[in-house]
Amino acid sequence: MTTTGVEYYEIRVRGQLDCHWSTWFEGLTLTPLENGETLIAGPIQDQAALHGILAKIRDLGLHLLSVICKDDMMNQASTKTSLAARPVSPSREPILFSLLVIDFVLFASGAVAHMGIPIPLGFGIWNETFLVPAAIVEGVGALALGATLVSLLMGATSSRRLAWWALWYCCAGVLWGMGRLALGSIPAAHTVSNDFLHIAMTLVTTLALVRLASLRE
Image (cartoon, rainbow, N blue to C red; front, side):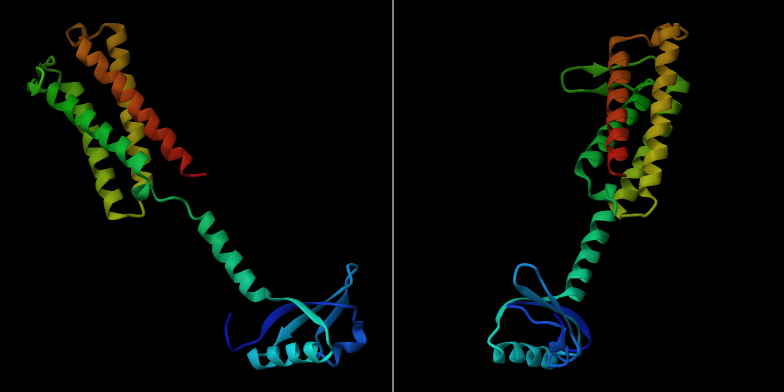
């Protein structure tokens, strides 16, 4: 509540006062209520004027029930509405960020593996058939996801749009790869590890898209 400036107040007292008392209360509007109370409402210049009104209520022997500054309530409601309407920033959403990190690791690993580079996994060596198209598709996906993660960390305003483009590209890339495998056009790539890689990519990318979509509501 501020100490200066005109603000709109609603004051409730126990007891019935008709409109003839408006002059006594500096022109404020008096509304008798059915529950035996009276609502005194209107603009009040400053805190000194407010205390003058409260003194008059006391002089009449009325029981003061409430004093509400409607301007304060409207400002608070406006602030809450603004905060509620503000979309959640993906950069502050740990679930989405974690899914993007996992997707980045999957696509980057797939690109490296399909370049014919062995990847040590601790319990063995991951080897895939040398496939340039797959390495390019997965490499571009990894770059897009990496750029998205950087933009999220920096809090860039375009991070959400970039996340959409990156995830949809990855989704299309995975479907293209799985389609080629299903058609048998690249039989050398039909390995258990490659199948699991595509399943993991599909699952994580889909979850990330669903999570990103939920942040728009």
